[in-house]
Every structure is written in structure tokens, then in C-alpha cells.
Amino acid sequence: MTEFWSSLSTVEKLFLFCAVVGGALFLFKLVLMVVGFGDADDADMDVGGDSDLGFRILSIQGITAFFMMFGLVGLAMTRQSGAGTALAALAGLAAGAATVWIIGRIFVAMRKLQTDGTVRPEAAVGQEGSVYLRIAPGGIGKIQVAAQGRLRIYEAVSRSDQVMDTGAACRVVALEGHRRMVVEPVAPPSS
Image 1 (spheres, rainbow, N blue to C red):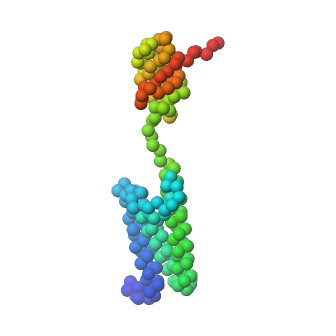
Image 2: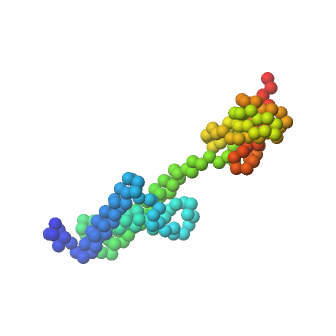
Image 3: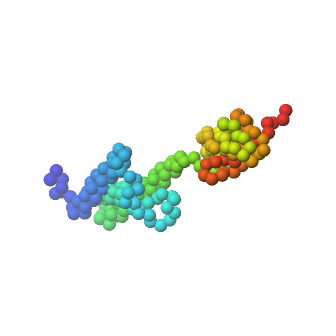
């Protein structure tokens, strides 16, 4: 091993150092994320643009991947291709930048997979449902209605002067307060 190390030039040692340290930190952070101890957003710094895109250039993954690829490509260019220092450094910079861009695109794609999962009662306005618990005029009952693809049961009041029995079709016309639905009866289709 010392024979290999002593055969390297100063520039090659720099490339090897960048590749080993960057690669080790990249793999360490990746393992932490997979196990659940790492947060993909820690130490991220938004660099211009729309933060909703989720592309953050200066992340731990981006920096470590940059140095890993800079070192690997630079070392390969000097050792295998016999390229000069400037060309190897330029190729390493290009490979590092491309890697950061690819990782950014991966993060954008991953963020698009995230969903809130919160069912918002206002999503039920305009939807048809059925009476779950009888609604008397001026009284409170319950309805069953699909909101954001989920069947939910909400308290409901009717502005109608007729009783709405269990199982009757209804339409949500407004939201009263935070979770109480205002409904109206839906006439059954005529034959």
C-alpha cells in the first residue's frame, strides 16, 4: 500500500483523497438515510430559484458526491489516460457538477412522491353523500361523504324544512365552522 501511495504524484494524492473522503461520507450519509437516522434536508441551503422544486445544490449528499466524482474522474484521467493536471481537474469538475445535477433531479422526483395525507373537510363541498344519522330541520345529524378519495363521516345540518332520514341522498353545499357540513337533499332520479 505504501508503494502505491509513494507512486502517486501530489495531484493524484489530492484526487485520491477527494474520492475516498467524499465517497466514504456519501455512503455513510446514504446508509443513515436508509436506516432512518438521516434527514434528507439537514444542512441544505437553498440556492436561488423556487424552493418548491426541492432542488438544493448545497446538500451533504451533493457536496460529498461532487468530491467523490471529482476525485475518481480526476484520478482516472491522470493515472489511466495520462492526461495533464488541468485536463484532469476540468474533467473532475464536470463529472462532479453532473453528479450534483443528477442527485438534485433525484431529490426533485422523490419530493413529488410525497403527499400530505390530510383530509380537508372543504374538499367535500359540492360532493354527494348519504345521511348517516337522521337530520331534523334545525337539528344536527351526520352524513357520509367522500372527500379526497376517502369516505368520511361529518356532522351535518340542513337548511331544508324537511326531515332527512338515514340513507337519503344529500349534497354538501357549504362548510359551517371547521367540520360541520351544510347539506341539501338530492331528489332521486325520476324514472
